[in-house]
Image (cartoon, rainbow, N blue to C red; front, side, top):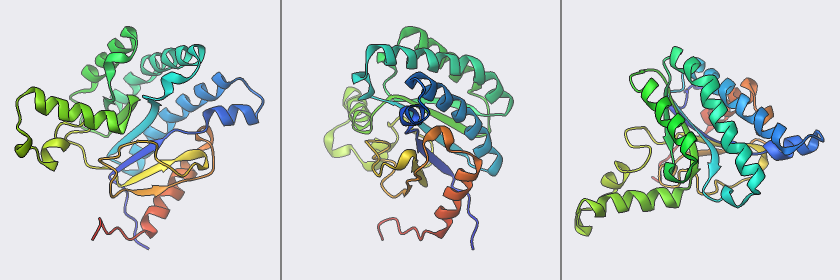
Length: 229
């Protein structure tokens, strides 16, 4: 069997709350465990040869959750960057954010920008963290950029839109994974993922480990990609 490592793996980190509920723990424990797992899996993905990992951690729709939960998540993201960004940099990982940064708390925006600056010259794997991200919102913002600089409708091409998305300069995802068994992508990378292979393991994100990623890659190698042809 062929053994191709996907160049870009994108993951919807689903199931933190269900994981906590099944263990009769507060929701916050699930989110904390999920963030810790994100770091572990980014380093493992780099080890096996993945060039880009994109993790969907907070969508534009997640603001509808309770104020307490949203506040906890924002602090958790700040702590995540504080705790791990220097280690990522030591491994040559370049950190990027995708999503509308302006709505995030000012303190989190600052940490994100500092992390991007710290790792901007790294040449290893790219780790994208999707916070306040929505696929439709991303496309809207890309079109707004083009309009704002005076690009005429007749001059807008598919390539030009792609060059103005948050993932500009990166390959489209070969494989999109959503943990916890839900079989939908919920607006995640809807432009970039047009021809991605989809994989829906039943385990919750905190339990998605190295063996689970290996299984996902093995499944990817069984697929015959046609890219719409």
